[in-house]
Length: 477
Ligand code: BGC
Image (cartoon, rainbow, N blue to C red; front, side, top):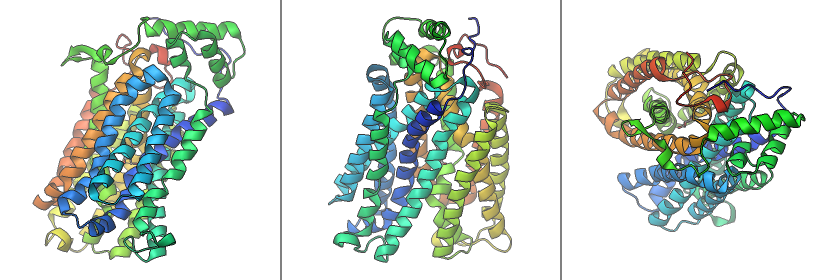
């Protein structure tokens, strides 16, 4: 396949940045949902008298909803368009937030958390798909990294909003405004970003790649002109034809297109699934979900532990900027390689530090310098993840698949990511009971394997046109 070139005269317009920011707000919902439950879970457990297992399920059921949402996002995006999926994601999230706030028993809370989770799953697929499809190749990595920036800001915002709300009632279980328990407000706040996202999404143009797939060529050419800042009709028409050629066939894409010779799937789909698996396998969400108890084990009291968790989440936001600054210059692969190496080293140090622990469960303590060593290692780990694997996996998932299968393949890879997230975060408490050194040791091994995987199989996509992504395109290394 001949290499496609950028449209002559294309530049980064304010419009493309703006519509990418709108799509990225889906990431805010993603991050918010991941973290809002942390502040509410103890109060919910107390109010509904939940067992430990049920309380854990009230937290993790949203991840299963997200896996389902991600899975269906691809088909929906190919049938109804990218914009429709954004709006559907926002609506589901808003319903989930309102339902959770009004929950009267654990069973309906679980139901609403799953509904909100479906919204988050839709958002996790559609933001990277849409951004990759509107962005000029030269700055695509930067624009797609905005989604991760929004995820990390969402995590931080939920943590902060939970803290402010809990404070207003003197505790998450206590009554606050209008006689409502604080934890209910924590969920309800999520309606605001959902409504903002839904309304803004109504105003963005449809993805030009989707328009071409639906045969709306003039409209596609108009949108390309707007986002690329190009007025030369002929050049735009050439781009539209390139996109048409890359779609190969007239019929609608479906999950069947993902089939291939390697264990039933197209090799590039496996690369996507494994990127997702390793991004979760290194244990990032264990750090986010369980950080407060981690810090308590190194000798911090509850409020210091909370402050440390906030600092970690701010660090996570800040380091995303490193990726935004470098992903289009040095490329995706070098960032992943650096990230795997750094995470492997930091996790190994954590495993060694926790092998020195005495006591267990809530009474676990680290002697001497091992406490500070573990704190530093955990933060180094977050820096290594946040500047590399966090954003870059989403950038790659948005851009690495051929046009024809993008939405469907990304949906499968993202669903795999939510399932891996579920598996890692629900297995952590049992692993931790055996010994935290085993948990961190396992994540260290997975970080090492992720390095081998990247070196051997991940293609470099920096600067490539989407029309050149495909199984028949040799990977650049
Ligand atoms: C991951 C999330 C994680 C977040 C942390 C994202 O890229 O997909 O699972 O919670 O990064 O910043």
